[in-house]
Image (cartoon, rainbow over all chains, first blue to last red; front, top):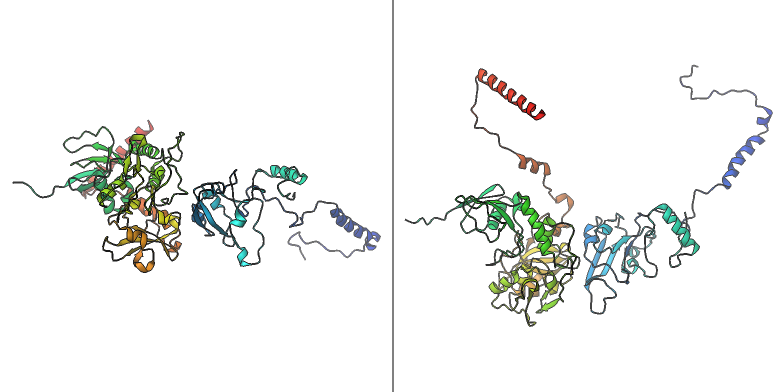
Length: 198
Length: 370
């Protein structure tokens, strides 16, 4: 029959040659391709021991920053909560008492600050609304997997920054981040947990 | 024969003609325009110190300065300087320029800067944020940046009596609270001490404001200088829900606004009209002591302007009726057709007129090209 396209291959029933008949050369060729991949760089990573670099502007979990003296920056102004499209943030304000000046920067502070991580859509509007540079979304940490409902609402115990392991975003490009990771892995920056290199 | 009929004065405010009674101020005339047509609300000059229910208030903050382009029909000269609209009385045939004059808007920018010189800008902490007149004024008329580098004057916060707290740092010296104490209560114990840069609101020797109507100074304060101690840091204004309510009270009208957080009344204030002014002052018992829903008869939710942050997160998105921008624009640019021209049916005349019009159009386009 006349071929309308030239895509289909014409089959022939011609006799195979000796080399083709013993199969071994074809098997060897196939094995060579397979074995070649053993020596190539792997495309997969061993998550969760190894984590991929997410970029400097990745929006992960929230952190409530402290200032250089270790005082909480948040003043419970409520702008993050009013900006939040998912209504995930709630807070209760409290007046700073005398003698607490080393704990809180402003006259007023958030006694309770809760983020519902199930509601949160990680849009970063709270970060933008904050007039005191208190709330940030970490670029290097996710919200971990949870199994219970009460693990979903994060209070101040989880959100407030640890002064011994401060959250700093020094790297703004992939190269900078890579260089920093190398430093951390080598132990040049000791106070930060070494993060895996992609 | 004396004419005892009330005369009517005609003035032009931003191109809008309005008839008012003699003795009206420019500010009041502007408010009459906005009351008649709510779309002209933005024309009304801002007021920081002027408070219609308080006699003698106004003329201090200079926020409401306007240009009078024509003094009156008899004397058509413009007034040499910008005049405060809240204390300047109208004259027949007066032409006032407010937002139509760029010099006025530029002046207002300067006024904002002056008012903010010693203002701490601690809005994230301040309880007044969200219903603060200075915040609105600075947002609408001010510039985003400050040029002020010197140290601002600061004061310790003071407790005036058991209910009112004074943050002198935030005060803009509008004198409203002084007039309130003079006119609403029967004894005033606070006032403005010092002069010029050193002027401050105070009680001289720490004295408590102890009067049944003393709480009203909180409502009249345009900034967060006088705040409710029972409401201090309880909640942000825009997270609480205002509800109109009334009760039987032998001292005041008992008509108030309750501010709810969930089921709990966290604050009671007097009702404010669209200019942020209280017409019916309430007593301290209503304001500070009746903080249970069972004390009140609920009338319904307070009307809050859509532009206000207080309305944030209060209504479902599908029930909010947004103004149709296109319709508004069309309405603002609509020109009525001139029907005074004679109606011509004669063919010959129409032909001649059209030729004439064509010639005119050709000449116009030629003139534009050259």
